Length: 354
Image 1 (tube, rainbow, N blue to C red):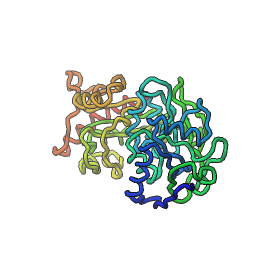
Image 2 (tube, rainbow, N blue to C red; image 1 turned 120 degrees about the vertical axis):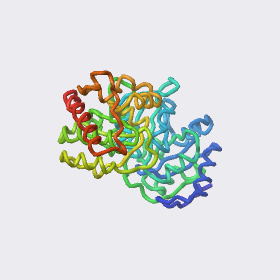
Image 3 (tube, rainbow, N blue to C red; image 1 turned 90 degrees about the vertical axis):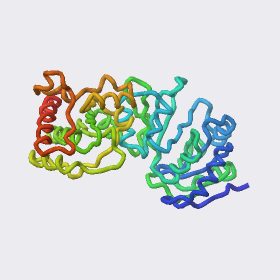
Image 4 (cartoon, rainbow, N blue to C red; image 1 turned 45 degrees about the vertical axis):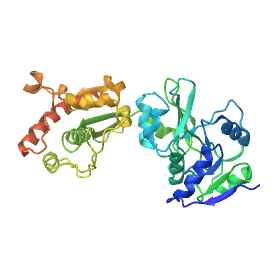
């Protein structure tokens, strides 16, 4: 019997069709589906019978594992406890996209390869399954990975339950695979992301500034430090807020006092603090003790990387033990200038560290 083929729009997948295919996967079936790299076979990773069938269809030996796909990068803590900043630098830079990372399994039993694909159909399908989805390329082992549904069916017609045809893959090359189970990241297979790109990202020192709304204090710190390290490719500077729920630009007063310093922050858009941002940072500078507590509640393992920014200032208040940088929001332009002066002094010392 031939495999049923369903055409699905690559950018706007029909939800009822995705629901039909995800149910097949949950019921132990196999589904050919598109990603930006190559076409794959989706299977319920937690279903031993389905996985045995997948291995038989692929003609893959028992000692070769299958990687899994995630629908969003924030789900990676469900798969591993690894907190290596280099891992999070890569996934924050390249996910969704053609990067597979091999990490120690959260259970402590072996390793697992994970990826977030950059294809609306794949993301929707994986998210709708609500289980681990194994997703090897849709070909018999040893043959070229297919970049169209028709190519996949040359090998697998009649061997899988359904095939989603969303046109040709755009990347047309298997993902880059990076192993994080050793002392340092190792490229096992170079794909669309090159060894040079991997090296550049993993060797960067990432500095994260945290305040509440990511509209004034952390913005000042971010853009002042960026001005100090301009031209350096080995340093990445970002900021975020513990209370960001709606994206916004920097406050008018922040824009004004930075402009007086010759610094332009007009393109800044606020972002919330996330576990991935915290885990990728080599140094995290917070404005208050309250922010430090909020950071550690989210990701306790970054404790040794978190500092109060004012610890690096020699102001009178600091010497007296007041280590919080006051929030100038809603206050006068002079208050913003005083806040900026404290931040500048601290940033000047941070530059010496990096």
